[in-house]
Length: 157
Image (cartoon, rainbow, N blue to C red; front, side):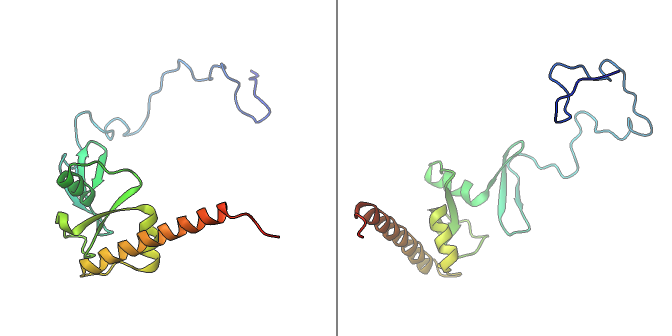
């Protein structure tokens, strides 16, 4: 019984496996320990369930196998807008349990990187956090302007 294989040791396309058509009967307690149709696991969450994770963030179940950050969900519902994937929602006062729409702000991932690097979010003070967001936006604009000017400027020798 020789089977053709390619140089990598893999089976050739179109080859029939040796066990094709053979019946499989598992042994032991396999049949009685399988998941039964229609039964839900003990930790199953209904649609609309709100769950807090270990990292402190809260998630809401929108559909089967579809969870979303609760602050993102609240912001989208309160503003009736859909956020892009490149946008994130942050808590202005730093409290991950304060879901008031006035406490949520939408920023880009680029701005978030600068805010985290420079530590521009102030816990307990939403006004200082808003200022930190403006500083991050300003830094991005300055960097874009510097890059544009360096491209336009001819190199000197």
